[in-house]
Length: 460
Image (tube, rainbow, N blue to C red; front, side, top):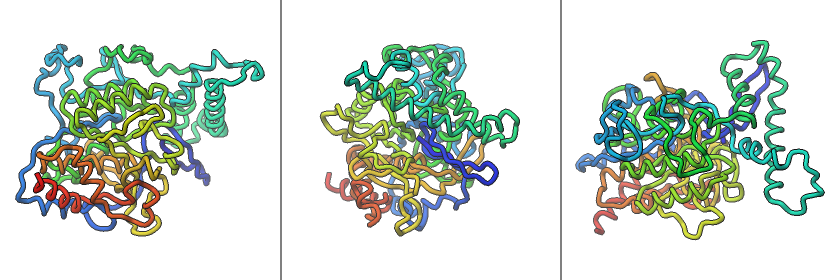
């Protein structure tokens, strides 16, 4: 979920909406995570690596799409060399036609794409309403499904009620375009049980084996979020343009999966498998939601990545909540899970401040479920049309760690991604304010991680 704050006249309105971490334009400083403050000291780490060669690492960005033609991402986009572009043939026999730069799970084979989607709670409400609408509660003794129905019904109705005072203003054109679009999307798509957010795609979201959908358009209609994430990971560090990403020898694989709303569990599960099967060593997942009806599918895909030695990086979410008590899905540990995953990191967002405000006010936290914190406030990076913008959220913190992992893996190819994960966790700078907010109690530090990797490499 993300919390959007916007202004109507003198009122500041805050609403929670689905999936992406907070993406809000704010004043900030260019790439402070590369330098001082409570940053990662990325530039200093590169000075330590001058004499080492690096190997290319593929990072999958499961997100809203990536502007693969951005000026600061040139040469940084993954190319599937086994696929011949635009010949409408699955040349590499991987099940995806013309997937030259990744895959779009939010579209159909005719090239039409989905952008707006319902929140997961709205989908659940739509599914359960025919069974429970108008039923006498006294006729139901103990039914967890009915309790879920009541829960999502109350939540969706409460959210819709928040927008009712502004609907008339929307119709009269009294709101600025950005606010008007936001309210329209909430009422007509995100919180509308009647809206079918799979009609364009045409698959059966209840059938994991129905996989013949999507298209190779890895940018889609609104790639702002995914492009910003991709730039944090790997924007060109040597072209004297815009910004510098964390990893210098990286290729970005775009796997478009997250709409304006909540992602489907099926899409997430297939996206993870696609990334693993096509060579990604690190997968960034800057999304999350409060309900996961097909959690088993997602967990099985995560376990598959784990088995293949691929590192998953997940944003903790932006509801200022303890995810040990209220999960943000996907999660590192599900109720049905019998063993821990060894290739996953959940990331909270830190600020540049070395005091009690080091944890960003919007960031989720958890002594068990959150592993580390990384810069997620005042992050200036790439957005579509070769532009740049300041955004903030755990969506920005996760790719900091994904880029860090890719960087370490490229310079220390003899280390496994499990060891890279260990290096990231064991080398954090512990902060008093974070000791009870994540299991390492600290902010990631690239310099310390390089030193740790040096020790691991020498021990081989």
